[in-house]
Length: 313
Ligand code: AKB
Image (cartoon, rainbow, N blue to C red; front, side, top):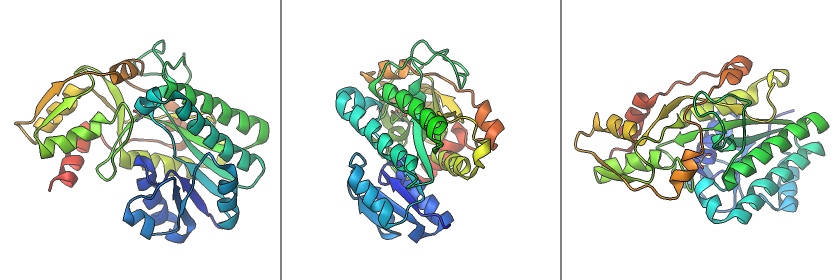
């Protein structure tokens, strides 16, 4: 049977690029973009687009039946910084949307699911460096609690009901095509925009806060690769650790100064510092390498070159 793919949250940071990559791979008409609001013109004009609230099961079921959907990528979520401000809204969106999709698969209305998890599943008691796939996980953020719970449910639906659900624990994602919104790692995108427009950036994290990060092309490649892997090779059904690079705000500033020598960085840490302090500084991704051949291509130097090169006027 032919693939018919639904992206939920297609207008967000990952969703936008993922939709375009899937359309390039499987054809525009086979990839249905959906979101609660309209997105960029390119995305809306290049293939089918539907307005969809991911927490509304009936509307979702209708779209799935109409387009004979076989796979869903559920990218709608409230991220870490916004979730601290609206805990119940974050829990409702992040969990109900996941249950809707898991239940569609349980009822055999779709065959396969991709659901993004995050490094936020780890917490302050997790070993910070080279953090293993299975380790202490006591998330201290609303977002982290929702992702950790989501992972347990994915694993449960796989073992109990045979639902083919696949997931990645994304680090902070960096892209020049789309802006992030409401995350703690967002500074690593904003900084490039401000470096070009103002030659200055005030960072909301301290200079030595090291976090795992990834260039968007690597994240999209990993997502497509995991979804194409034969089911028996997908050994982790909670969510895979994934790693590309780790850096601090001062290291990204230096990497920008190699291109823009008079770029100035200052620091005014806010409530997001506590979120960042609870997360690992580097991730061990040996399971993703072993099970589906994962290997990152972009380090900080290459990312900075891509970002500045593409954002420059
Ligand atoms: C966030 O900062 O909330 C996200 C994430 C690491 O999941 N980018």
